[in-house]
Length: 537
Image (tube, rainbow, N blue to C red; front, top):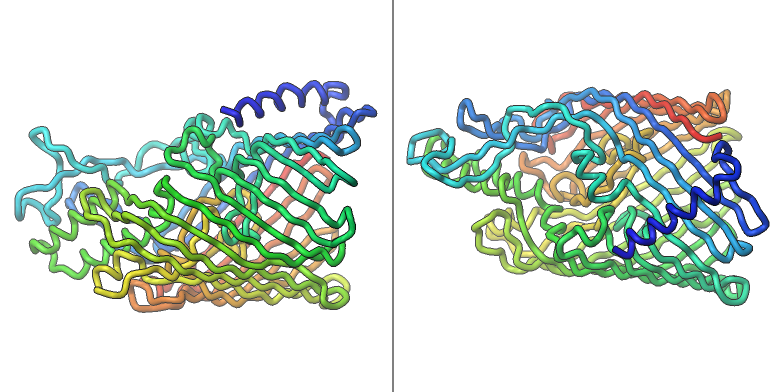
C-alpha cells in the first residue's frame, strides 16, 4: 500500500511539472526550482528461433503418454514479433537535494500460445501405458500441460497481459531521494527502484525498499558505504505471499571518478517457494530420467509416470535461508584498458523441500555456491576493442537426483534471486533483445548443472556511427547432464546497431550455438533478430 501511495503521489506531481512545454522535448519544466526530464521509447523486435533445446514435457491425451522423447533435443522453433514501450520521468529540485524517478514499461508484449491444461487421474492397472487418463466418477486429478495448444493471447513478461497489469500496474520505478549533510554526503532513497547485487550475478531487477548511502568522498576519504532493505519482486509486495526482504551492505573504494573496488554482503530468508522454483527444471529432468529407466507399460513405469504428473501438476515447495558475500570492481590498470570483476560465494540451507504434492519432504539441503566473472577490455586500434572474459557459476546434481542415487546431501550450485546475465546472446539471452528479459529466478546453467564459459568479445565502431559486436564462447557444465555429457557447446554471435537518426536506431543480430554432448540433439541452434528502436531525441 505504501508503494501505491508513493506511485500515486509521483504520478500526480510529474504531469504538472512537465505541463509547461507539453512534454515534446526530453527536458520539460526548467524553472529555478529544478528540472524535470521526460524520456520515452518504443522498441520493436522480429525474432526467429530454430532448433532450441526443449526443456518442457507435455502429456499427450491421444496416447495417454508423456512426450519425453524430445526432452533436451534440438527440435524447438519459433517466429515472433514483440514490442516494449516505456516512459521515464526524472526530477531534480532544490539544487539537486531532492530527486525523484517515475518509470513504467509494458514488458515484452507478444502474442503467444500456451498449452491447454488437462485434468488427469490415475487409472486401474494396464488401463493406459502410463496408468493415467481422463478423470471419471468425481475423481480429482492434477492439471497437466498437454500437447494441445490454446488460443493466441497477448502476454507481457511471459504472463497474461491482464495479470501483469493487475500485479504491477506496469510501474517499474517510483522513488524519491533526499541528500543531506555536508556536500550532500548522506542520501536516503525510498520507494520502487532498480537494485543490483553482485553486478547482476545475484540480483538485478526492480524492487521496493529503502536504502542509505554515505559518500565519504565528499568529506575526504574515497569510500562509499551503502545499506539497503528491499522486497525482490516486480509485483506489489502485498500481493506476494510470504515475501521477505533482502538485506544488502556494500563498501566501495573509489580511487578515481570511473574506478571502484568493493565488497558486498546480502542475505534473505525466503518463504515464497521461489527457491524451489529454481529447481523446477531439475525436478522435471529427474522425473523424466526415472520414467525412461522403466520398461514401458510396466507397473514401475506407471509409478514413475504418476510421479512425473505430480511434479508437472503441483510444483515444489520449500523455505530457504541464503547468504551471499563477495567483491566486485572496475579499474583501469593501464591506459585505455579496463579490468572488471565480480567474485562471490553463497551459503545457506533449503528446508522442507518437496518436489511434488503428497511427497514427504527431503532432509534439509545445505547450500554452498561460487561465482566468478572477469572481463578485460583492451584497445586494438582506434576503432576496435577486444575483451576476453570468463564466467563461472558453480553447479551440481539437483537434490532429488542425489537423494535417489544415495549421494551425499547438499547442493553446490550458485543460486541467485533474480540474476541478469548477458554474456552471450543465445545461451544467456543477451544481444539486441536483452532489455526485454523479465529477469526471473533461474538455477545456474541447464537444470542447475552450472556454467564454465571462457569467451571473447570484439566491438568495432563502424561507419555511420554504427556499433558492431562479435562474441564467441565455449560453454561447459560443471556436472554431467542426464545424457552423460558436460559440453553445452560453442556459441558465436554477431550484431550491429545503427543510429539512423537522433530518434531512430535499427539493428540486426545473428547467433548460432553448436550443441555438445549435454543435449540429446546436435543440430545447430540459431537466432536471428531485426530491431527498430524509436526514442525521444
